[in-house]
Length: 427
Image (tube, rainbow, N blue to C red; front, side, top):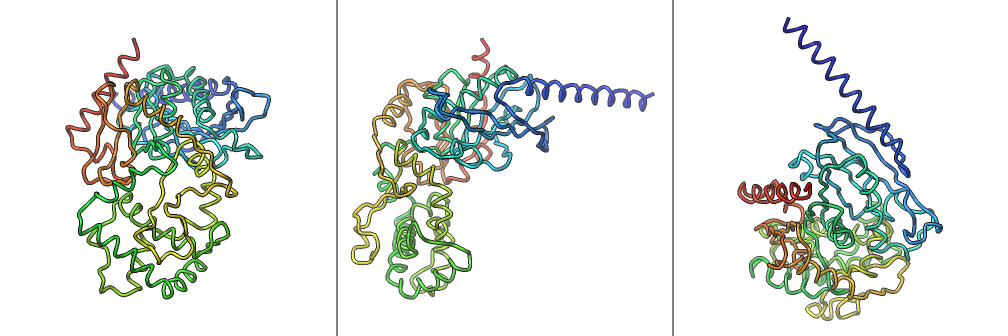
């Protein structure tokens, strides 16, 4: 009898599952502007689909044409909440966010406008602005909100976290809560708060070790450049946007930023007695030349456009290396490399407006930062004028400042707060 009951239960469960698949696919089919194909479902999910959502190039003037934006839907249940993951770059495959697991939620992961396949045939950067970017997300929220009626929460990491902040700024009622991770909010084209952070993070001994690496690499450029040239050739790197010599100097200036952002070990910094091969191996591990090669310059062109146009970024101080830099002549060169070397038209008025909003009006926000991550320098500061929470995690960097690495008490506080906000949005 037990075996018969189990068989009957499995048949019923299978039938219910097939019915849900059928219902989901039928409802997706009925949505306007959505193309979809089934993909492998992540563990714990009933189904998953790659979506291509028709978006206007200009949301205010749809007659200017359209493109299809790629997204990934992971379906658990129509009764579960939805996590909207706002990517900052391309998203070539389905990626599951930890928040989705903690909330037992569905998830839609959205590739950013003008990255990957989510681009019109002809890129007109005039329409790569945050008003258009967030209108894309709002359109997806409106479409899928017809299927998923439980509370929505938005989240993103790094530049994706910036997108989460800007999305909430433009559309404060789209979600019950927002959880940006390690998201800077830069206030200038080259935000000086980065310099202050790098001058104080870690121990004095570690900072001195970092500066010694920079100085030694520059002083031994004649021996190191031929090695780097062979390294670049072997890796298939090309340098036409920047010369290899320019890339070398930018990498030297970038070294402390990358060191702290990625949480490298101070104990692993080569001492003054280390041979040049050991020094070079460490240097390339922390900040490789590929970051400045053509593939990165062209692949991240849209990112650099946004930084130079609306979002701001960071720069480098060259005074400590006077006489050692031969290619970079500016006193504070920017880390922005505009597509086609177009001029930058950054106006701080917009980001400062968003900054003021975070300090006075941005409720139901949870900010997660790593205390040693360079980008925390330009993170959203704590404000007691909003119903929001900040978690600045000691010893954590850009990749490790995550809910799973919090203390049990911190994690419980974060999830309880989210639950309260999500429940409140139902009423």
